[in-house]
Length: 561
Image (cartoon, rainbow, N blue to C red):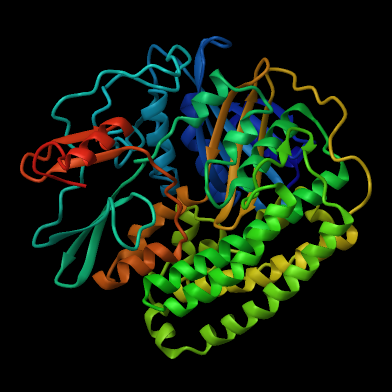
């Protein structure tokens, strides 16, 4: 057990003079270190103190400090403490030492900082472009403050994707960008010897929508939740709640107790909905469509319930900074109890049938294994981590909303295969039902919004919320009327980085199952990238261009999506 004060003393003893600030009722510690001390401090915190890396954030603070800022957010899971190690970077020489050789899970986030801010992670093992499209011009960084939110830079002609070279004596098999078992666009390249996968490459971010830029340039504090809840079609309430809690932590706003209980109820209803949705899709991937039909039939009850609570079949329109917009009346509370009783009984029947299915066991056991050590190094979260024996859950480790008042059971398995990832989610389905019942019994009376919440500029806040897919993190620097910086790290972000490890030495037929086992969310898209199979030339279509091409029955060149 380490406290904020003890951690501060350890860092000062190890690094010498550092700048320390706190936020979030003392549960968040911010440390500014010299660039030369970055690798040392990260190595010390990760390897010696046992902290877990959540994500990395790049921020252009030149209007305030004249510097760029790169922040590494760590979690001390059992100590309810978040540590942010920050380094200030001179815009004249925007280079830092990469920490990816120390923590492989820092890979994508450091590349994203390079893409969006222009800070180069020196000695990064894979310094390819990550977020920006292949035809985006070099030296144009969209998250810098001087980049207009509505500017569209000229596209690079004859751009080619930055793909890994295949190993010797292997063939390449592609999954995506559009594939029958992928609900959204993603591009996996499998390097195979016969039917055996010996390596892989991934190209994603086809649906990058610039939400963070909209928040710091266009929307005010209480419009951002309505954007945040559209980051994901399933975890909308998770993201709006996580954003609001980050602002509340920065501004030291306390949401009323009843609002916290309503948030908890909605978060768990969303988890039930997500796990039933995933269960159906997982059954469909392996050809077990009875599971798809039954789980989605059960899920429909929940969709009707959320419409009665929120006014729509999702969990939209509920959160604001300082509380929630809608109450849960006594009549609705009774309705929730009735619907959950039916969902629980029907789900038990489906789970009992799945658990005893030997064909299903043969398809999922020992498929896509991820060891506990790899899970920690890659920094995976949620059911993926817990199936590998990594016992983390934000609801328990960093309790928020009403979770401090509830009894939570965290299912943990140890084999790290697709079957254990399934078992974690099946267990969590019933844990969530129990948590909603507890919250309904204990929910106090009172207001649902804080009185006149004020957000002072220049403060920082971090929030973590346990989404159905795992821990979601939002980081906020407050500005005048809107965030100066808002960074979102969804739970699929670290999970996808673990997929290449899960692929190793598996068969090609297992690839869709492995991808589906992490319950990936690639998000919705309105643009298309085509690759000419002869020249490898790329073209990215806007919505209007795509409609015109579809109506004419022609795409440019001899191309395949």
